[in-house]
Each structure stands twice: as C-alpha cells, then as structure tokens.
View (tube, rainbow, N blue to C red):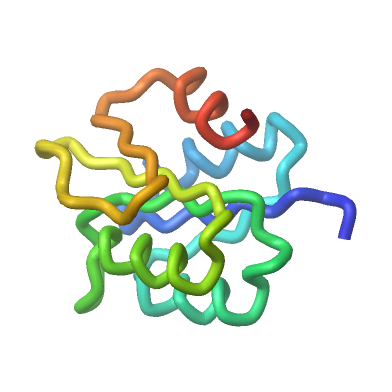
Length: 114
C-alpha cells in the first residue's frame, strides 16, 4: 500500500468529519470509528498499514481513547498516536502525543506528518 492510512476515533460526528477532511486534504486515506472497540479491530487487522491513530479520550462504548492508545502502542510501538481532549492531560503511554481541544489544525497535521 502506498497511501498512508490514518485511523480517526471520535464519537462526535462533526468533529470526526472535520478530522477526516483535514487528513484527506493532506492525501491520507482515513478510516473512521466511533468506538475504541471498533478501532481495536482496525488496529489488529490493518496496524502495519497505519500511519497514525487520532483518538478522543471520551468515546462511546466501554473503552476510553487512553486505553485504545495503550493497546495501539503495545501492538505497534512506532505508530504515531495523538490523543485529543478538552480536559486536562490524562496519563498516556510513552511516545503518545496530546493535543488539548480546541487545537490548531496545523498542530495536528505536524504531529502526524512529521
């Protein structure tokens, strides 16, 4: 696969659409999920093809974005993981980036593409 894939996990449809469009505008293929449980399946099956995981902390379902970040980093330690939240920084796995909402789109793109 020569196209980079970003996994966007956000239960708010407007925010998910915004994130997906932002990344698609940069030429990335985007897979969207509303729950960490669904995203876990994507990571398990497509993990090596993923360039980045972008997840909100609070999601529908039982798992949080932080737990999803931990799962992703355990399976693929080099995967770029960006966690978004409007609340204070939660404890995150090593080498996980945090962006407070509202964040600058340029900051998100820099975190993923650099």
